[in-house]
Amino acid sequence: MPLTFRKSFRILPGVRLNINRRSWSITLGVGSGPHHTISSTGRDTTSLDLPGPFGYRTSRRRRSR
Image (cartoon, rainbow, N blue to C red; front, top):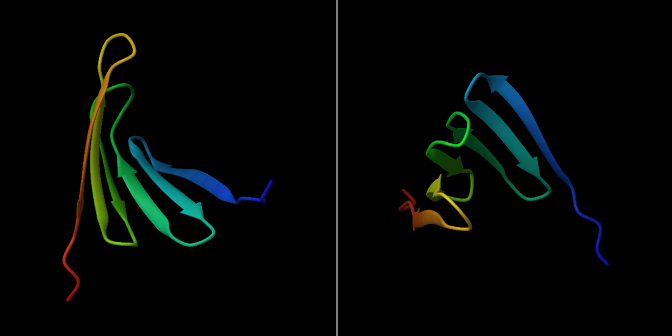
């Protein structure tokens, strides 16, 4: 079983900084509402928890400059 590293810091209400071994990301969103995550690897993810065992999630890759 490989060792992993992941840490999440609350910067402001509704803003979290997530750090793992290879990248970092910022998540914007409050409570169980919609969340938007921007990653240092170029990925943008929007997610929403729906009632019951359902959820919505979409991801896209930003173009590199």
